[in-house]
Length: 196
Image (tube, rainbow, N blue to C red; front, side, top):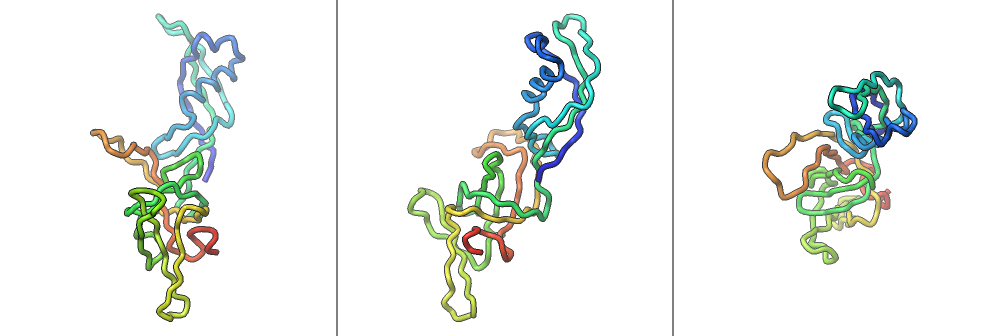
């Protein structure tokens, strides 16, 4: 889920940060550039772990600040395929579920990855939203028990795919998500934690 990534980056250290010790000033600039941003095919940048090497410090002609080449390690969030994670439901609609880890909100469980047989009913508490219900018949009696997927519990899901969609050319209705995690709750032991 979290891993360290070694990155080399060239940056300009603004004059107002020259009074700080060099590693602190560079870390401040790196935080502004990378923190809470998604790097394609890498993941969501969570924090700068350490600075391995600083070189350069040259002032270009016409510039009022030095330029450094910095090698650093960064903590990155990107779940791996098959990983089990626990998240909270933030949205439930006809397409499935949208979940959040608190710091990352683009986790989706499509309707076909919900436990089957499953159906939806309108959610009286939230307009234009639905509540999914799993019907589980323990002994094929014809009277299945109904289990709600209602957002009150945390949900265990298995990661199926992590994708980095290209930037859209035209404006979309939904906000653009630079990293999408698709999951499933259709296997045993997955779904709202109160079920198990």
